[in-house]
Image (cartoon, rainbow, N blue to C red; front, side):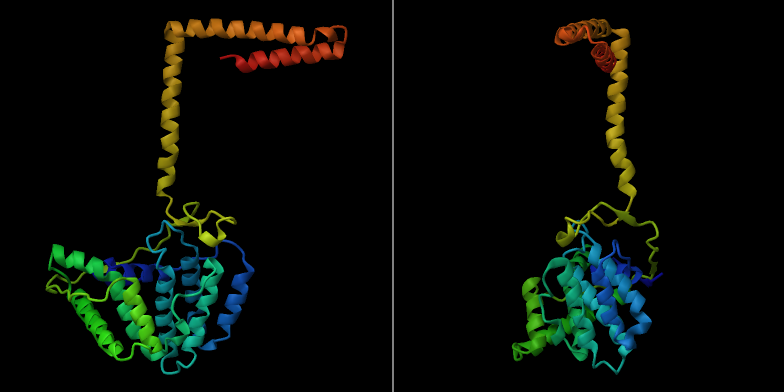
Length: 322
């Protein structure tokens, strides 16, 4: 279980990173994963977090279009994984860009295209600042909604939004004169993509008593046919979803059918409609028998065909009986 500040836990980036911490698993066997895992294993310095990285990557890879994080899943995955990798590399981070570049193969496998920005150009020393700002851009509208409705927030929440804004402003200033540098090209690309070039500073009072939010394990989640990933839609209809809607979907069909059956039974038993249907079906049986008699008249001397005739007649009559 992961515990964080209750207010921060409501922000999109915190929510999805916590989900990635729990991770998922492969939904089907694919030779691609064997090659990917082999490549990742080459970097022994991250062996301690290999299983955690693998589960997070599995989860992000298989969520479908109806998931609210679907559109940003690859960027979130990049920054989630990058932070984990840097934590174990510490000062020995020369392989950081190489390790992170492997994610391109995953995205390309599922979407037939690589990352929109050159992840190889994000060095370890620039990564953390870029992550802070990326998360802030994703969380900004939620933060604005919060502080507009109420200035009450926890101290951690206030510190986060103020420090994130400071990082945002610093990068804007740095990249004004270094716009052609790789890092600034990526940063300015984010500002353009998310239309966040001129954000206003947001704050709150920080007086709200701190409450620890404890994330409940996702044991109740299973794999249902909720969604599909675009590239593999022809191969499967599987995605991560809860099972809470299954019962309601079944009842949607059962209740109307049950009502129709009850109404039909009442009409048949206790109104003139029953007599009408009985007479209509009786005539139908008689007409069907006459038609079959005429159709097979020329086979009347053949006992085998006569048996077929009788069996067919019985079949049609029993099929049309109420």
